[in-house]
Amino acid sequence: MIRVALIGSTGYTALEVARLLLAHEEAELTVATSRADEGKPLSEIHPSLAGRCDIALQPFDPAAIAEQADVAMCCLPHGASAESVRDLATAGVRVIDFSADFRLSSVPLYEQWYGVTHPWPERVGNVVYGMPEFFGDEIAKADVVANPGCYPTSAIMPLAPLVRAGMIQTDDIIIDSKSGVSGAGRSPKLGTLYCETNESISAYAIASHRHGPEMQDLIHRIAGKPVDVLFTPHLTPMDRGILSTMYARPVLQDNDTVQSVTSRLMDELRKTYRDQPFIHVVDHLPATKHVVMTNHVQMTVRVSGPNDQPGRVIIVCAIDNLSKGASGAAIQNMNVMFGIDQMMGL
Image (cartoon, rainbow, N blue to C red):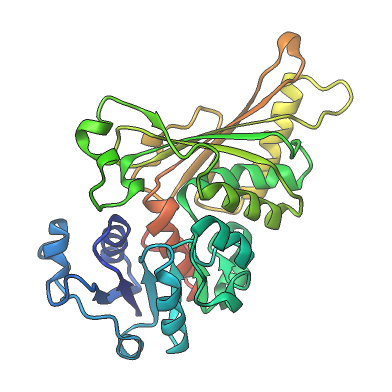
């Protein structure tokens, strides 16, 4: 049985980890920590766990956690997580980090976008990105895994294979994403109050969202080609889910038509993900309802153009931001790390 520690237990991602572990046949939650709520049962923080997961919240003590857990799910905020990850890894606990502290490939890039000095800089660029579809062999051996961002997952999954195959131009990629309110976290904020978000949709962090450089960095690492991404996120009045619509220019061949380009792009995605159980290249237009409460991804391609002349490639991808965009991906990564079926518990 894989013993799991939950570090920082009060947020939505922590609740989702606990919920998923209750159904996991080969893993169990043995430790949960919280600096603010030490001593309280986890079910007092998350009432939906009452009678199912009532373990008491402990202080953060890496040595004690190492005696009780094989892997830690670190759900602490960006900038605060890296030090705890370092201490846990040093104590011999394998770690899946939910923050962005180890996702990017360089310290200057991280410090530019997150505005803090990294406490474990020698590991930046040396931590595997937690996307088993591309980095499964590295994840299996890793002591620390950087769990992917939610928006980046919805963009990287469809874009990286097409960039790698040279099928879309890399200098003009537009990503328009819409997310449920849970993506903003559980802490109260004016912009995510019910009266602010209900019956409304709004753009935010235009040309300044921290997930933009993560998308560029990871597509480059996977595809081996730099890309120029323009990313705009939107907040939508739903609990969970992300729908990303991406626009790019196709790389054309002689006598290409809208149909031929569409078929070629869809075939490339199907070839890339034919052995990946969570990724589905579909003919219909994906919607968040199709993937909510699951670790599954749906994506498809359309091509626009007058008189059957290809103009723009339009890619649509749907994920659940709390599952494949966070906690489900972490469970999938844990399964790969410990050599069991990656679908277990999912």
